[in-house]
Every structure is written in C-alpha cells, then in structure tokens.
Length: 225
Image (cartoon, rainbow, N blue to C red; front, side):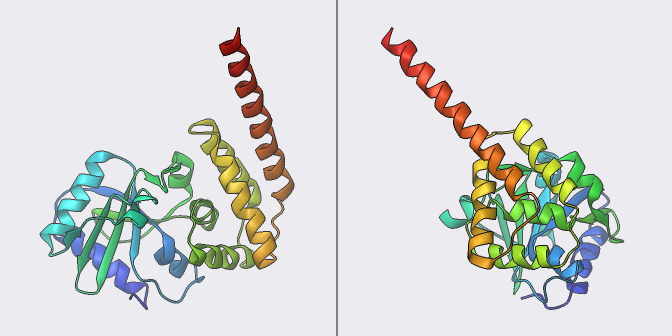
C-alpha cells in the first residue's frame, strides 16, 4: 500500500537512474488521485502508455530493477490490464494504450496531464476530468466511490469531460457511450451525484440505440428479401 505520493515519485526517479532511454508514461487511478488531493492511499500504481515501444521498454525496465511479472487474472483482463509487476509490497499495473478495453489515451489527455520531475522516465499525472472518464467504464465499486469524490471536489471542467467523451466515441466504438451513460446514471441513483452533462449523455445514448435498432431492422429486412 502506498500512503505517500512521494513513494511514487521515488519509484520513477529510480527507473530514470537505471536507463538512458526517455519515455513518457501517464499516471491514472489512485496514485493520480493522491496527487490531486482526492485520495489518501492506493494499493497500486496504475500507468497507461501510448505505444508498444514504451510499453515494452517500461516493462523491461521494471524487471531490471527487481520487479516480477505477474500475469493478469480474469478480473484484470476485463480491464484490459496488460501487465502486473510486483516488487515486495510495491505493485505497478500497466495498461498498453487502452483502459478497460474501451478508452484510449488520447492526445487531449496527454496535453491536460501534469509532468513531474522524475528524469528521463517522464511521469505525467492525468487530469481529474480524464481520471473520471477512465473510471466511468469500470465495474468496480471502489471506482464509483472515487468518481463521487472527484465530482464533489468541484475541480471539473465539464465541457472538457463531454468533449473527450465525444472524441472517444468518434475515434473508437460509439457503443461506449451507453456504458458511460449507465455509469453516470448509477452514480446519480446510488451516490446522489448528478453531473451537468446528465441530459446530454442520456440523449447521446438514446441516439445510439435508435441508430442501432434502425440498422438492425434494415439488416433483417435485407436478409428476408
């Protein structure tokens, strides 16, 4: 368990000291929430990288400093978790480009992140808006608690959140809007957290279902001709 954010910084400074390569990595999950003052501790360090070369390089570097690779279990595979690396009580969960099989690390997310002074292994802390989006496709109860905390913090730019969600839809699978909308509807019902984008999300989700049903009906009609 990590109780102080400096432990995360020390880990990535150690990694920088053990390589002459430069790489950009992005902190999400509990570690990023600690940096934003929204969480007191985290069980692991969640990292997402933007390309295969960085993923392979970071994995090898962690192995070089004594971490051991632990294959993701079925529950982790549902999150699109690519690697789990453990050294003593320290654990790094590593995502290669996508999180929960649905959301990708976009250029907008990279631009909104905050860089830390960790050397050549450059750690960037993702913005609260993007942490909320990543958590919106998770099935874990703890992520609902974290999401409620993020919203209550009042640090959100809701236009940014909505813009990124639309970007993810337009450049990936548009079905993801139904999962994101369901998440925020559950957050409103269970945690009494109602966001300013609730109506727009529901409208986008309804539009997706109407489109899907129309395409499905046309497909059946074509098959019967």
